[in-house]
Each structure stands twice: as C-alpha cells, then as structure tokens.
Length: 571
Image (cartoon, rainbow, N blue to C red; front, side, top):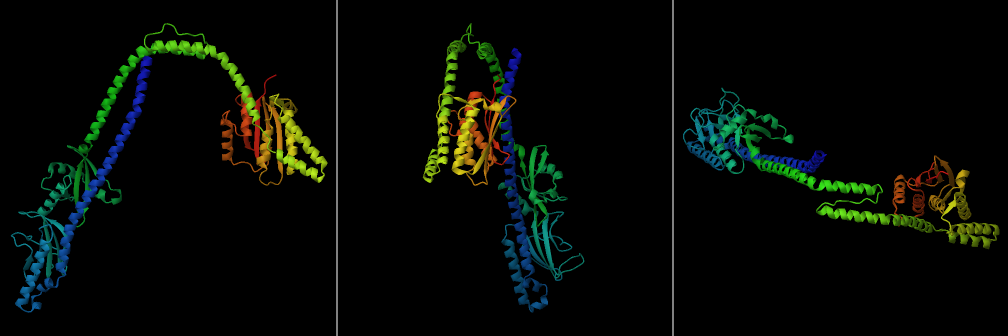
C-alpha cells in the first residue's frame, strides 16, 4: 500500500514536470529553427552582396574592353596607312596609351588592360612591368577564363578581337585584353573576411580553389568533395548545404559569380553558434532532474507525516457522506491535523443540528417559490375586451356583449383564485377555452381543436400552466398575416409520462433562435423569471422533479409546438 501510494506521488510529479519539459523542448526547437533561418538569411545576403561586388569589378573590365574595342583611334592604329604621316600616328598612339592607363587606374583592382596588334607586333598596355602580359593569348576569343603559369601567379583573362577570333589559326587585326591576377581576388576575399564573412573562397569543380590569405585550407579541403553547386540552381527553394566535418557541423553557402562561372563559398560553424542554446538546454535538464529528485524526497516525507492522519480524516468524511452524522474523530495527532480533527468534530455536530432545519426550510422555500411563480402570470388583454364590450353595446349586439362578459368573468374568477396551488387539467382547459373564445370574438381569424384523453382531464397540474402556452400562440404565432390560424391542444399518457402539446400553424421560429429560447427557459434561475414559458417550466420542474418541464420544437404544420411533460405518480 505504501509503495503504491509513493509510486503514484512520483508519477504525479512526473506528470507535472512533463508538460514543462515538453514546452521547453518545443520552445527550444522553435528558437533553434528561427535562429537557423535568420542565419541563413543574413549569410545569404552577405554572400550575395560580395558576389555582386566581384561581378561588378569584372563587369567594369568588360566595359573598358568594349570602350577600347569601339574606339576609332584604337582601330586606326591597326591600319598605319590610314594615318597619313608619323606625327598623326604618334598622336594617335599617345591618345590610346593615355586612355588605357586612365581606364586601368580608375578601378579598385590593378588589372592589365592592353591592345595587341598581331600583324604589326605592337602592344599597348596599361602596365609596363616585366611579365605583366601573359606569355600567350587564348586561341580564340572568350569570356573570362582561368589560366595557370609555370613560374607565375594564375590569372583570369578575357579577349575580344576584330575581326572575331574563333580558331587558333586565325589572325585578327587587333585584340583587346583584360587580365586580373589571382592575387587581386585573394586580396578581395581577405577584405570580405574582415568585413563579416567567415572564411570565403572561390570554387569551381575541377579547379584548385582560390583562398583568402588567412583561409583554413585543411577544413575547406574536407568540404570540397561534398560541394554540389547544381543544388543551388533553383533560387526559389534556396537551402544551404549542411556538412559534418571532424571539427563539427557547418552550414555552407554558395553563390555563383556570373562573369566567371565560379562560386563564392562561405560557411558558418553551427556548433559554435548553437553552443549557448545547447548549454542552456543541458542546464535546464539537469535542474529538472534535481527538482524531480528533491520532489521524490519531499513526497516521501509528506507521505510519512500526512498520509496516515489524512486517511483517517477521509474515513470520517465518508461516514458523514453516508449519513452517519454521529461519527467523530478520535486520538487526534500532533500539529495542524489536531486542529482539523477538532473542526471536523464541530462540523459533524453542527450538521446534525442543522439537518432537520434545512429540510424544513427547503419545504418552505419550495412553497414560496410556487406562490411567487404563480403570481408572475398576469393577463394582458383586459383593455381590448372592455373596448369590445363597449363597441358591441353601442352597436346593439347584446348577445355578443353578454358572451364576452361571461367569458371574461369566468377567466378572471379562475385566475384570481389563490386558495389552491393545483387544479385539474379539465379546469385548466375550461380557462383556456374562455381565453380562446375571447380572442376569437376580438379577431375571428383562427380556430382551435382540443383532443385530450379523458384520463388526463382528471390529473392535477399547477394552476395557470396551460394558459401561458396558448397565450404565447395568440401573441406571437398569429402576429404576422397568415391564411387562417389553427391552434391544436392534445393530451395523452404514455409509459408513465403525461404530455400536453399546444401547436399552431404560424410562421415558426428559426432553429438557432429556438435553441437560444430553450436555453433561456432551462437555465433561468428561480429569481430571474421574466416570461410565462420560463414560469411554466420552473413550476413543473419544482413540483415534479428533473425530467419534467417544457419543450419547444417545430410543429408538423411549420409553426411552433410547446409540450408540457411530467411524471405520473403510481396510484
């Protein structure tokens, strides 16, 4: 027994901690996901920015080439005979040389811009240092291509010739050359690293990567076999590569430099960024484990010091619940439970004294509620009937005036009786007939049918419970114009339940409004009765118990059907 209770306490503590741990795990996972997404966005923005800078520099050299290619002076030097004399040739040569040096000095990179005239052997270049020009030009014109030298630094070169050179054997009149050494790109990559990138480098499958000057080459070489540029072809579904190396997990970002066809690559050490979150997660789980251990110890102490006296107190409460009000707590323990035992004994004594008074008070309250509910039913048509009698007298219709007067007299004689709280259904039906006859004289636009089993007529029901149902039909069902109103009252007894149904052929009530009306009728407190239908329902429930009352539904004619039901006591 003890081990079972202690186990239950431990399970309860686990159940209390489980939602907290689950919520923390979900929050932690969400935070990690959001942080990862933000890293991806920030890093991609950085990479795209620097890719744009690289592309802009190469595009700048492209524009220099085009300007020289389209220059008249540059083309004239290819045909010396057109210049006329040596002075004009010298001036043209000087102009072209100055223009090349101006263009070469306007950019951030120290690239080589040159014009080669193969037929004359003349070369005009922007830099006169040794080995500045490549040892050999490409066999045909092409966009930026990567070239290696045996005893020199690799470079990117682009040529454009006139006429265009498409094969090795062809010889052009002039060729405009743009050349950028690998050192310039390495300097730019190092500058990118200083401005926010982790360790950028240029990469193209089949070529040796171009690193920045402080690159971690050993780590990059571990990544190279898994770099798959084709996965980045769809920009709408961009996802970085996730790689696991000996140094941990990395998020790799790649973006193509369009003029070159190479990729700018940078990586983010995920383990390093996520380390604080993982430390917090580990700390949380350790603290949760310590709390669970301490809770187990506390649960054991509470079990030893509280469970036994609490179980005795529960036994005493069970005796009170079963009606044994003479039950008293004996041998009170020390501490707070002594006070509880004393209060329990005082409570049991007081309950025993009050139980009889409570029963008597309930009876008096029920009788008072019945009288109060009955007093709330009042007629609303006195002035109309008096006006009708006056009109009939003025018109000389003596019989109509007398008939209306008799019906009105019987109606009020019955409604003002307070000596009896119950009446037979036959007496209630007679009141309803008087009420309906009065309204037929006033409007003459409806008829009524009564079909009640004889056995039901002798049953007693609370006074003035049937009339509000008929009154509700007259006031609401026939308010809108209809062809001809019909009120039908039926009564029967089935399976020990008596039912009285009042239905009409009026416009009815929408289902939603009907449900709301039933909710107000059933949930109205005894002190908050504000309609005749609520009055009828409360009186039936009060006198006949649960299961009795008033039910509203749609009638078979399309109007409203109000059904009173109550349990018939066995003779």
